[in-house]
Amino acid sequence: MADNIIKLKSFSFALRIVKLYQFLSSEKKEFVLSKQLLRSGTSVGALVSES
Image 1: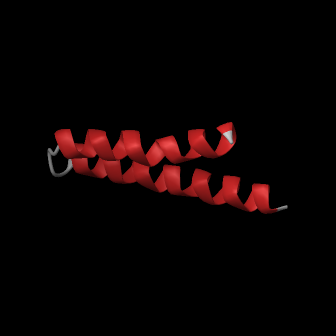
Image 2 (image 1 turned 180 degrees about the vertical axis):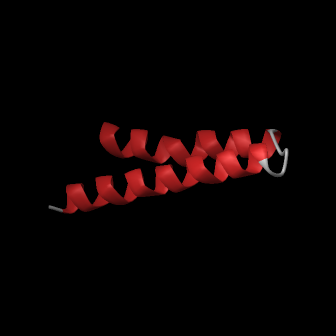
């Protein structure tokens, strides 16, 4: 049961990170920081599923 909650929360977090990345790169024209944010924010889900 706890695994499902963690996976759900990490997936939800990754979706929010992707939306933030899209906003930063399109509206604010920030590419370096937004790319790093995308890589680090979406790696959480990969680490959760690996463990």
